[in-house]
Image (cartoon, rainbow, N blue to C red):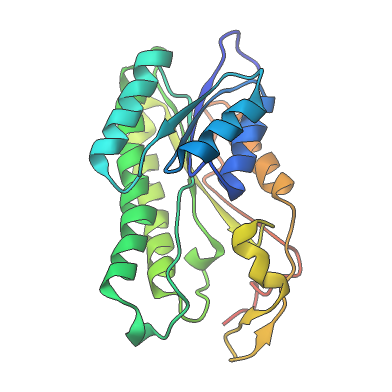
Length: 251
């Protein structure tokens, strides 16, 4: 890293999947990493695996603003600053027909994916404005669905379209305070959540097809590239995807 002091990165949804992989990558790159998630056991195992890098596990549901405030207050007390927030935590609704999507499933996705990202970004911005040196970087995990919906994905797609608007607003409002904000849209990284891709998933034409996946290593490399840029530069949006997945031309 280019600076003498150790940078502090916060990763939400850190216990599994992309969050876990990115947290490990940041730790390897000599960041102090704060792991936020809902499952204490997952976070504790990851913190242990990351040793001797400095990692702290903080249990919080990002959809609960009180828990988010408490989590970020704990980060500020212990480390005094936040250099990078990877706003990663997210959920999906069951794959059902549009009219069969329940109130509870809709609200759960919006509360976690959109409201949770806002709550975490809001606390990070507050800290980034008052820390010295001022500023920091927020990287929102969007989705290919922010551009092209999959069948029966209204809640998830709506939440990720909204993340694009949130990203632009944070980038604009943070500009005067050296707070950069960007969005990474990931297509078919190989995690437990994408295991069904190799078995076949619904396509826009009604067929079921297998889809290629890519290693999470490529996602980690992309996030690190974005995170390590000086605050005078920003990758505002990036799409990283398995080359042969049906995205370009999908619809």
